Image 1 (cartoon, protein in one colour):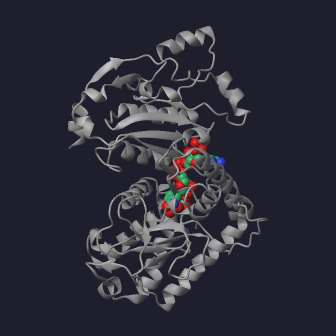
Image 2 (spheres, rainbow, N blue to C red):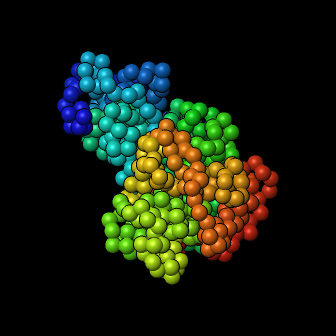
Image 3 (cartoon, rainbow, N blue to C red):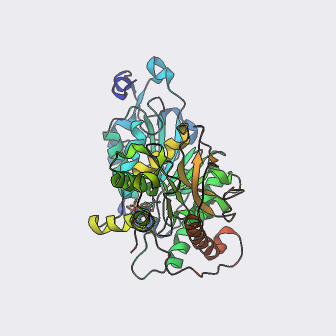
Length: 442
Ligand SMILES: NC(=O)C1=CN([C@@H]2O[C@H](COP(=O)(O)OP(=O)(O)OC[C@H]3O[C@@H](n4cnc5c(N)ncnc54)[C@H](OP(=O)(O)O)[C@@H]3O)[C@@H](O)[C@H]2O)C=CC1
Ligand SMILES: O=C([O-])CC(=O)C(=O)O
C-alpha cells in the first residue's frame, strides 16, 4: 500500500488537550539553571500523537509562573501532536504492525537531519510499521531538538505516531528496540586521538549503561559516532544484559563507497557489485576487500584486471573518501551516512540476497577468520531478516589481504588498550599507531 493511501485512510477524530503530557518550554532562567546541573531524569518531552494512549509514561510539568501558565495554555502541545487519531476505527491501519521504539542520539546533528525523515517515512522499517522516535540530545541542543520535532510534525508522516525528546539516556532509551547512536564529539584542533577516545568513550559507556538498564532486552544498537568500533566495544561492555552480538559499528558507508569505486572503474552500474567486504576499523586502516568482491557475479579482479590500481588506488580512495569529502563540503558526509544507516538496518531486517553479504562492525567472539577476539571488527555477514546475522564463511584470503587485516586489527587492539578504564579491564595504556586516523582526517 502506498504511504499516500495510508495517509488518506484515517481521519482525525478527537481533539485532546493533554496539559499533563508536555512540559512547558523552559524559560531562559530555567535553562540557565539546568545548565549547571547534571541532567535530571524525567525531562523528556513527548510530541507524539499517541501521547494520549500511553498514560503510564506521563510526567509532571514544572510549575510555571502565572504569565508562563497563560502562555503555555496557548501552546501546551505542538499542533498536530496534540491531535489523536482513532486508529481502531480505521480498517487499513489494522494491518499495521505494533509500534516500534527507535532511539536516535545526536538527533540535532547533520546525519540525523537526514536519517530521521527516512525513519519516519516508512522507507526503513516498511510501510506498515508505525514508529515512535525517541530523540536524545543535550543541554546544548535542546532547542534545536524542538526544531527537529517541529519539522517532523510538519512532514505529516502517517506512520510517525510519537516523537519525544530528552537529554537523559535512561529516559530516552526506555523500551527501545533500536538505538542509533550518532552523537559524538568531533575531534578538535590539537586534540590527541587518545583524548577523543576518552571523551567519546565516556559518552558511550554511559549510554551502554542506560541501554542495559532500560532498553528492550534484544535491542539492536548501531554505533555511528566516531571512533565507532571502539565506541561500540565500550558500549557493549557496559551493557552485559544485552547480547554483545546486537552491537554494530557502522562500516556500511565504507562498503557503499567501495562499491561505487569498483563500479566506476569497471564501467558498470553499482548494483552489479556484490560481496563487498570492509574489514576492520572505520578508519584509514580499513580494508576494502577486492579479492572477494564480485562484479556481475565474477571476481572483481578478473573484471578490472588491474592489480596495481586495486591494491593502491582503490584501497586508498576508499580509506580516505571521508577526508576528501570534508575538503570539498567543509563538513563530513551526512546524507550518504544516513543512507548507509538505512542500508545497515535494512540488511538486518530483510533476508540477504542469495550468495551476497554485507559489512558491519561486530563483536569478535569465535570468528572463523583468525581475527583477534574481544574487539569490534567489520566483517562479512548474512541475515535471515530477523535482526540477527551470521558471519559469511565462503571467503578467501591471500597474503596481501591477511597482511592488511593484521594492521587494522593491531589498531583496534591499541584502541582497546587505550579505553581499558571504560570497559572494566583495568588501567588504560595508550600506544596508538601514528597512522590511526578517522576516514575524515588527513
Ligand atoms: N561511522 C561512519 O561511517 C561515520 C561516522 N560519522 C560520525 O558521526 C558522528 C556525528 O556526525 P554528524 O551528525 O555529522 O555530526 P554533528 O556535529 O552534526 O552532530 C554531532 C552531534 O554530536 C553531539 N555531541 C555529543 N557530544 C558532544 C560534544 N562533547 N561536543 C559536541 N557535540 C557533541 C551533538 O549533539 P548533542 O549536543 O545533542 O549531544 C551533535 O549534534 C561524528 O562522530 C562523526 O565522526 C560521520 C560520518 C560517517
Ligand atoms: O571522520 C569523520 O567524521 C567522517 C567519517 O567517519 C567518514 O566520512 O567516514
